[in-house]
Image (cartoon, rainbow, N blue to C red; front, side, top):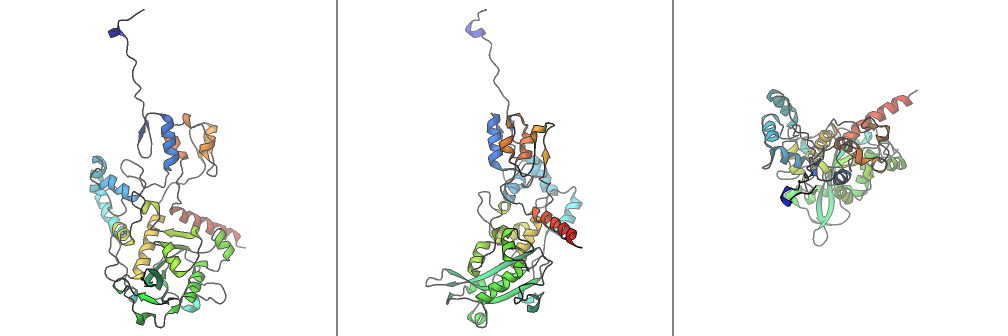
Length: 376
């Protein structure tokens, strides 16, 4: 049967779109969606909109989604009514939002001059290799740096402060640099020549800090899996450790400058001043930088992220097919029939490319159970 040109039946164009269940991007071909899921590293740890459940790569991108100039109408209207501007949580009612904000909006830490040292030097005994400070999971550090060298560009540690998870001051001292100071950077540090006249030598400072961090654990164990050693929290830790001329295993670092959800949408670091104002609700570094306030602020940021209640990434069975079961220790992208999986199933096997700090709470809980089992 022949048709006139005008009578040839038109074939319907394919309008099937394959939508990512995390960020909602759409693709014409299934293989493009699969490649997107593999390279985007969506996971249960992503910052997520409490209205539409869209996954975002950072809290800044989530903030733009719910309160930015191009935000979705439904999400922005609900967030404006009962969303927390600090942690971006959507509360169930305006009353619950008011209660939540009272806890979420924190007060500025007191200045270091009014903070009392929690432990005496006898409690951080560096002679026997064991610190008596054994009950804290994390320690926050902040260093104030002066300038050295002919052009004043060398960062020399002149003051250091450590706080525990309860915001108690556990170590604080002025530090005697190993080379002459050419710029005290007084407008920022508030440090003068007088402060450093009887300051503690850098080598002794480093030894005392490592004693606190190692927490009586052997160096080999600290390097392997940490053991009882402390998690070290700070902002731009590499710079702080460099000015202290100190090494500490990076698997124990928790750096608010490089933690992906706290970075800009282009993965450039925010300042600690910005993070504190945006996520904790108060100002720091107004005038002289206060190392105690900075240490407490990074600890608060860390604890707020750590307290997130994300679903467990464990052994998952997607669909009812035994072929689509896998262990969290295996690589599902090498062993599964992805073309037969739904977008939700693809999202379930996707994993984050960074360690979420919420996992520290689970690690600590497992360690407590292990220690309990080891008791006679």
